[in-house]
Length: 125
Image (cartoon, rainbow, N blue to C red; front, side, top):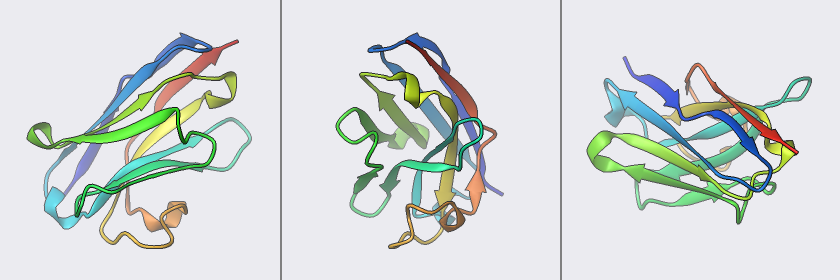
């Protein structure tokens, strides 16, 4: 059984940076992609970024492209989300996710079978 554990959330001022980490343990080889979603109060879950094991391809949501970077630490089986130029509208609970099959539905939450417990990111304006 695979478990995802997020860390690195917190409070930061607008324009600042935060780094989120997601450590995967267990049968991680069953999964072909990991990524992040976020959910702000009263809003639907939003795709943030994804990283595919095959080829190391990266994908980003429109609202974070150019500001956020997703990467993988192979040695630690960890996916990292570097968030720069943070805005108040980035405030949300951020969830680490994993998918067995990665395809054209990657922007949808139903495409990911595993979810972490979430970590709060708060950006003050």
